[in-house]
Image 1 (cartoon, rainbow, N blue to C red):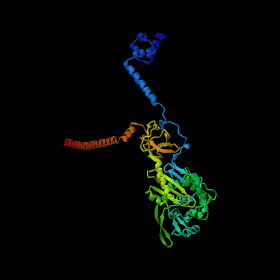
Image 2: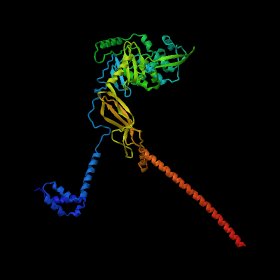
Image 3: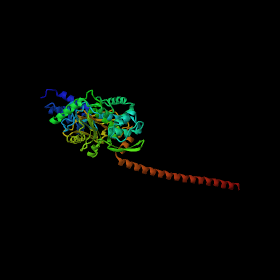
Image 4: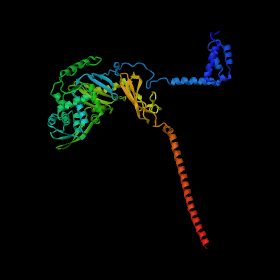
Length: 555
């Protein structure tokens, strides 16, 4: 026998039923409930069964439906994190992982740097942070500054210093005499394609009035571009090389590289950094990559490096001459069937430099910077690097424009929710054995968004994060239009935008109704005009009749 009073149980049951307001209170008397509890009371849960036994089937169904709705509401209100995948494992420290881990191309060059063209992420680096004497960086900085500061149609007047340097350029058939004027494009092509010191000095004097002032300007621009390891000493670097012996660091580097190649030692050769005895310019490949990226962002400078060959016309005292210009890196484009679109090469008795920008045979867009000693040819090693990139890396789809963003919906200022979709198609490069992508997304937005919200207009960015910490931003926007007022009319317009067939049907029906209305109005106007004529005629008859009646009375 249970150890509680049956009266208390029945009273509690009666109170619960009364509180529920169920009609069973008026149908089943209290004594009936009490009797049922007395006969069925064996365990505590029987009391609940007795309560439900007194309920009607309709009330039981309602209770079940209410319970299901409460459970559904509970799950709908569970907190969610927009833009985060289910995998919430902790990310690896980006400083411990490089995308190039495990990639060892069979190159025998002292310094190499390969970057992803779109993200500028490092795909391979060898001695890219080592400070080296690379005269070519002075030429590149002159090209960049001239493209930024001088007008396209500017004319360069040849000064005394320029004319003196031109006398040593016997391999160039266009003389530069003091007082002559040449177009800026010719001087840029002469400097880049024919390694002319005279052209570099002429451009420097045009921009800064003297070589010394121009070196100062180059240094300021380098600092602005983040080239903190770069120092310029001359803009006429060919003259500086002729008039000075290579520093001891160059000879030591040649010995170290020869030993490294002879022993076939794994890893990276150790190079001595440039010291104080530098006559041209010292920099790192990483700094040179920053300058190369700035040149690629300048249309005029990029056009010079994209040039393969060109015939340019110049006017001299003796008449019009045609100068043939050919890029020293033109073989890059020829050997790769124009997969390399931008390239430049400058040989030196310090460090030679080759720059390229293009795609590998598998379509991976990269930028390469390679340096060599002893004026070793850089074309074949660079092409070999393009091929070996394909053996280790691949390109995958990250997003496609129009795809839905798998995060929580955003809200407009009127409270209406809308889903997000990607606005850009983005690919990314990663090792073939590792997707190299952290399993999370980060959305950057500023909800609630003011009305109207237009489809395809950017509302924020989604950040994908690689394991090395590199972030890839992708624009996102609303996948629907939300008008300024959430009325029946605005919802109807949205439905017509989503369903073009419905919109066409409504427009055709509106045209038909409008034409019918116009026809009906025209017919009514015709009737009114006819009625007006009848009224006029009736007035005339009435007037005539009055006149006739008056005449008869007079007789």
